Length: 302
Ligand SMILES: C[S@@+](CC[C@H](N)C(=O)[O-])C[C@H]1O[C@@H](n2cnc3c(N)ncnc32)[C@H](O)[C@@H]1O
Ligand SMILES: [Zn+2]
Image (tube, helix red, strand yellow):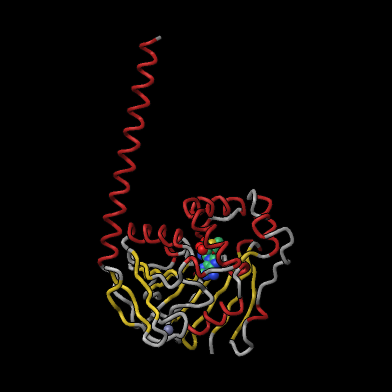
C-alpha cells in the first residue's frame, strides 16, 4: 500500500515538473519572439495622429522607454512592450469600459470560443472570415482592422498580394497582448495600437481599406465610430462593418451562459446601423454573412 502511494506521489511530482518545464519553455519562447517583433517595429509617424485633436505626433523618450507626443494638446502616449497606448483604462466609460474589461479577462479563451461558435453556426472559420476579408479592396495599400482582437482575421490578409501594411487597433490590452504574441510567433510585421474605435489615433485619409467585425453593436457611440472609420480612410477606400444580427445575438444568448445578462435585461433589437452611414458614401449596401448570424455594411468613401 505504502509502495503504491509512493509511486502515485512520484508520478504526480514528475507530471507537475514536466508541466512546469513546458510552461517555462513556452514563456521563454514567447519572450524571445516578442523581443524580436519589438526590435523590428518602427514608429509609424506617417500614420499615427493624436486621437484627441488629430495632429501629427513626434516620437519622444518617455518613462524610461519610448512614447509619442502631441504638441497641439500637450498629451503624451506611452509605447508599452511595442504597443502604443492611446487610452488609459481609467478614461473609459459605459459599454466601452465593460467590454474592455470583459475581453481583457476573456482573451485567454477567445480563439477557442471563435472556433466553437463557427462549429455551432455550421461553417468553416476560414470560409466565414473570408466572406468579409475578400470584400476588401486595398489595391496594395494600407489596411486597418478596428477591433482586431487576438488577430483571428490576420491569416486571411497577411501575404495577400493586394494588401500592404496592416494596422490593428483594439480597446482591450488583453486581446492585443494575445495578438502581439500571435503575430510575433508568425513573424508578421503588423502594427498594433491600444485605442478606442470612437477616437482613432490615425491621420485623416490614411488607409486604403478599413474593416471591423464583431463589436460595434455595443460601442458607446456607433455614429462616432463610423465617422472615424470614414475619416481615416482614403478617398475611394472600401469600408466594411460587420456584427451580429438579431438572429446571431439570440443564437449566442442561447449558446453562451451569461451572455444575455451581460447586456442588461432588455437590450434593443439589433438593427444594422446603415442609417448612420452618411448619404454621401458610395455604393452602400447591407448583406447577411455567416448564414445570417452577422450583417455586413459595405461602402466606399467618395
Ligand atoms: C467579438 S470581438 C471581435 C474580434 C475580431 N474582430 C473577430 O473578428 O473575431 C470584439 C472586439 O471588439 C473590441 N472592442 C470593443 N469595444 C471597442 C471599442 N470601443 N473600440 C475598439 N475595440 C473595441 C473588443 O475588445 C474585442 O476584441
Ligand atoms: Zn492632440
